Amino acid sequence: MSGSGMSENVNPCLVGGSSNLRMMGAEKMKERIQNQRRALISINQNIMGAMINKRGFSRKGVTCDKNLALAHGSNTERSIMLGEDCKIIDVEQGGDDEEGVGPMYVKHAEGSVVEIDRMEVDEMEDVGDPIVDIDSSDLEDPLAVVEYVDDLCAHYRKTEISSCVSPNYMDHQSDINEKMRAILIDWLIEVHYKFELMEETLFLTVNIIDRFLEQQSIVRKKLQLVGVTAMLLACKYEEVSVPIVEDFVLISDKAYTRKEVLDMEKTIVNTLLFNMSVPTPYAFMRRFLKAAQSDKTLECLSFFIIELCLVEYEMLKFPPSLLAAAAIYTAQCSLYQFKQWSKTSEWHTNYSEAQLWECSRLMVSFHQKAGAGKLTGVYRKYNSRKFGYAAKVEPARFLLDE
Image 1 (cartoon, rainbow, N blue to C red):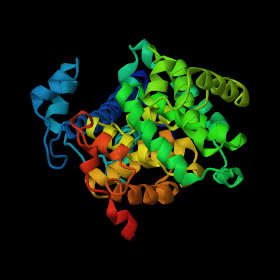
Image 2 (cartoon, one colour):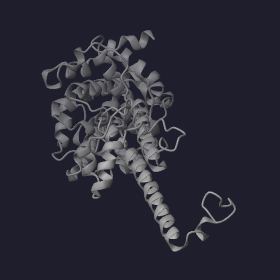
Image 3 (cartoon, rainbow, N blue to C red):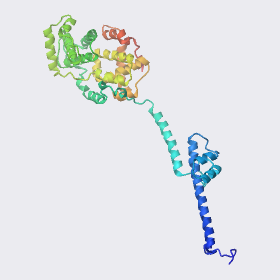
C-alpha cells in the first residue's frame, strides 16, 4: 500500500516498520527540544527584561547583546540562539500571545516593588511631625534611669492629686487672704535666690505652705513664720547643704525666735503627716523640657513663667503637670511668636494644645504685668544675666487676641 493511498484512520506508526518508528521518534524528540528551548527563551527574556529594567534601562525595543546572553548560560548553542533572537519585552504590559506572557513570579515581584514604594511614600506623607525618642541619647547615663523614667512619670501623674489643694481654701481663713499669700511667696522667691538654693526647693516650699494653710487657720502675724519654716523643711528634704535655723531667723529680721521656728516646724510636719514626697510642677518641668528639646533660652523663660504662677492664687486650680506643660507651651509661643506644640511634647505631657489654652492665656497676662506693681521679685530675678534676661522676652500677646 502506497503512502499517498494510506487511509487517514490508519495509525502511521504501524506502517513502515522500525525505520519509520525511529524517524518519527526522532522528529518528536526534536519537536520537544524546540518547545523546551522556546519555553526557556520566554523565561529568560522576562527575567533579563526585569533585570535590565531594574537597572534603569529602557524596557521597549531593546535587543539583547550576544555577549550578555553568553554570560547568562552554560549551554553555548542555547546562549547564542538567545543572544540572536531574544527581544526585551515590557513585563508590565503582558500580552495575551504566548510569547508576551511572562512568568507569574516575575510580574508579582515587580508589582510588589511598586506597591512597597507607594506605601513608603504614603507613610512619609502621614508622618509629618514624628514622635522623637528623647531618651535614646541617655542610654549610657545611669543617672538618666532610662529604664524607669516612663514609670516614674506615670507615677507622678497618678499621685499629683495628693499635692493639689482646694483653689478656694482661703475662704476658710479669717485673718489672711490671697494677696498676703502673694506677698509672702514673692518674698520667699527672693530669699530662695539669695540663699542660692536648688530649684525644686522653691516649688516644694510653696506646696508645703498651701497644704498647711488649707488645713490650719493662721493669723497674719504668723504667716511669715509659716513661710520660713516651710522653706527650712524643703531644704532638709531637697538640699545637700541645709541653711541653719539662725539663717532664717536673720532673714526674717529676727521677727521670730529659734524656738518659734522649731515649734512651727513640728506643727507643720504633724499636720502634713510628714508627707514631703509629692510631685510639684518641677518634677514635670524637666521631663517636659526634654520632650520639647529645649535650649537654655527656652528653659529660663519657661521657669520664669511658671514662677510667676507660684505667686498667683488663682493658678491653684490647675494640676502641677498642666502648669508645667502650659509654661513650656507659652514660652515657646513667646520666643517664636507663633503656636508651637510638637507631637513629641503632646505625647510625653498627655496634653493637647487645646487643653493648655486656658492656662496659657492666664500665663501671658501675668507675663505682661510682671515688671509692674509691687510684686516684682520674679521679674527682677529673671531680668539678670544669670537667667539670660528671660524677663525681657516679649509675651505671646497673640494668644490673648485669639
